[in-house]
Image (tube, rainbow, N blue to C red; front, side):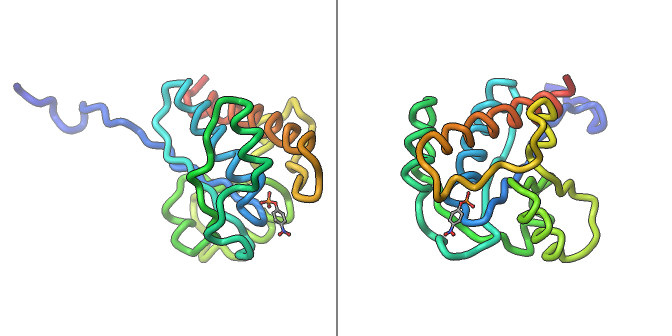
Length: 166
Ligand code: 4NP
């Protein structure tokens, strides 16, 4: 079969998105799982991952309450393991999205050099919420984790629509 000249070949575009919170056990694992599912439903090819600015929970699975809420919405996030953000993440991903303003400030400080990667707040993709930060649900109850789900789901829809060019 004759191949098209290289400049006419359509390559599958992979959007590499990293979600960042403090511990990488509550909010960002949920964001990773929800965004991967929403992006797939939009027909997008994505590589979603998550990390924490803190390292206290490295190697642990997501908080059982995040897993429970994910399951309630048909998602299994149990195979994820917490890790800490590292310098290579700033070039490995197209977008790094923080769950709140404290973690965004922390990322700005750790960014190795000024680059063109998008570094911002996840909730900016859901302006209808009127919120910039996903509240930390760690010391809360299951209702707080359900609230986290609603916020990250709305932002996932907004981001997926943006990436799909809608
Ligand atoms: P996350 O929640 O940042 O959404 O994973 C937290 C998890 C653990 C702690 C704080 C927030 N902690 O203090 O251990």
